Length: 120
Image (cartoon, rainbow, N blue to C red; front, side, top):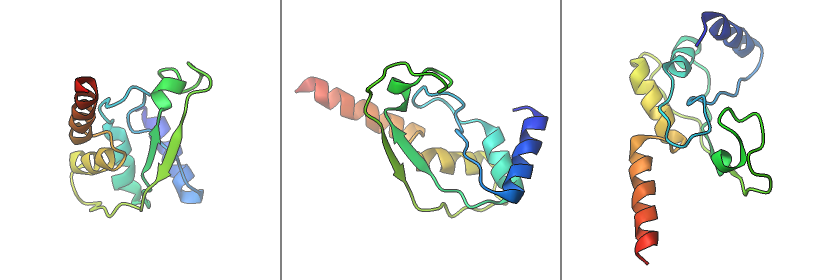
């Protein structure tokens, strides 16, 4: 993440709210970027996790253009996270990724679910 981008986000958070996609891609279970955790750590905002199912099917890699129109999307807002803003950025990022159901833990659950469907 470019330092100028981070500064713009810091300014925006002083005035309003910001939506960020911690993975920077629509690809499911891609690793989160530490820049998101640094922004959280430095600004101490209220973080509301949002789970968007079907996003990767509907949009291209950067989420700017439709890949498949008519794809079913679901959006679920979760309770704000309780964060230790003094924790290491890796810990903050892990908590965010788990909250948006994109952590390694959820990846394993997803693979297990897919395998059980294939067995039927």
